[in-house]
Image 1: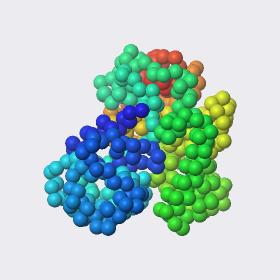
Image 2: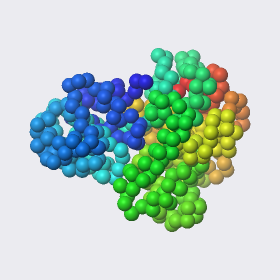
Image 3: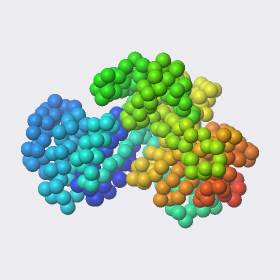
Image 4: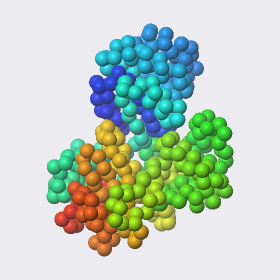
Length: 408
């Protein structure tokens, strides 16, 4: 499967001296480096010989390798970043010289912001998206949303679903981590997810936060599957775990900073309504969530009480992944007022303000869209979108269009 990030990486190499590719472990960062041509030299800091070559004297290493060098897992060696700044500044105008990758950590973010500000283009990489698993030559929903001239009529006329409903549900159940798609073995998938969570907690998080209670955090990580798609009250989570609210706040910050969890703050600009201000959140990969909930297959998933929240999280993440693949800057929110009216996803960027409601079913009742229609009219949105499993795009009202999720 060709990764959509290849195009973005090549663009950034024509604009920045250094490009940083950050993302969760096993999402495909190293594989992305292998898409580079043979003129690039690749060094992996988790390999002893490469760490010694780079780490003994980073300034000397970069003097000897001043161009087309890619360094994997750069966060392991913080001293590399000031050396990179010096190397870049020797020839500030030359672009496409260095690539670094790394799993997110406070040290990595701090090193990039302090040492490489103004010198680096940052790509946030995610696991496979639906559009990568089932590619299409036709423009998808996100492509059309980025054009401010697109109308609801254009959406209905121009986009068509990709893949089958069975393929979409298979993607939803499995999640997007590439390794399981390569192997294609259900037993391997279960083992891989189990080992991923153990490695994430016991290796990455334990190394980044040595004072963390690993057992409590492992329980918390498994709880996230059941919290996905819900408005999160951190005090209730703290009581369930038997820890203090500040500890749970730290847990959520760790989960978000390591790309396990995506938090959607509340959209609170309309002060005339009583808006629920708790954030809403999603486990960023649906496959990890289903493994944590011990869901064995798609049939069991559809009957599970968490199916709606999981589906909503998968769709939110798919939209975010596609925007990130294109290098688009955007903000995401959810919206809910005290009376219960809500909007699952509010997107804001140079493309405008767009409200999205997400449904698992095929039949959409107009009464259930009261919150979406009110939000569109109150906030002057370009339009509202209902993403569901309908067969084809259709106009619901003049300002609201229904789109099959397969059109993403």
